[in-house]
Length: 182
Image (tube, rainbow, N blue to C red; front, side, top):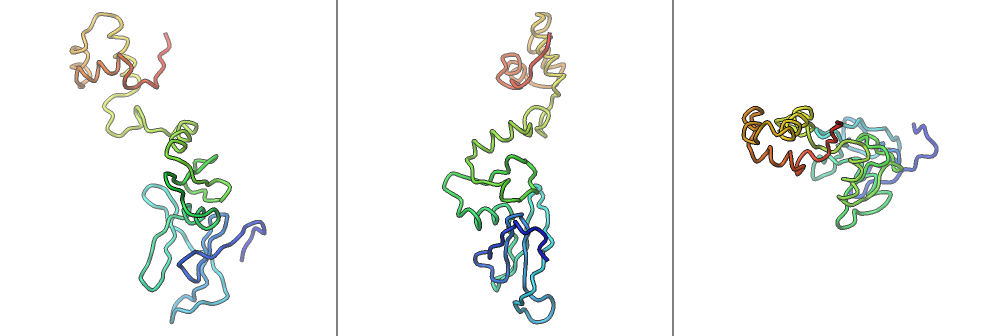
């Protein structure tokens, strides 16, 4: 049963017996159990979440089972193929599980990067798993060096990084998103 009358449904190309809703729902009219037969009864599929947080649908056809990203399905079926140099954007809502057509568009990699800036989800600083320093340690490194009482090598030894790392930090080549208040 379809709840929202504003939702549109389109058949999924190359997958008979399946359709996609403009709200990101995926439907099947394949009979469950027994011999595979397409019926007139549509049921909403249960979707899975990928390890990266995207919604996926498992669709079957004679050549096997296929896991497809729902946001790509919505865009491909309702908007058209992905233009060269573009990828999927979740905007204005950055929720990877909101696959409503009004939240999706094809965009460039730069537009996706700009969206991350707007949403504050850009991986930099402490958000990078391999980061050895915290924001407060970086601020401390800059203060120590600015005071003139410590060399870059001394600071590097204290924080377990290289002198080159300290140089990049104090010249604001890295961690340049941090603004220290005096």
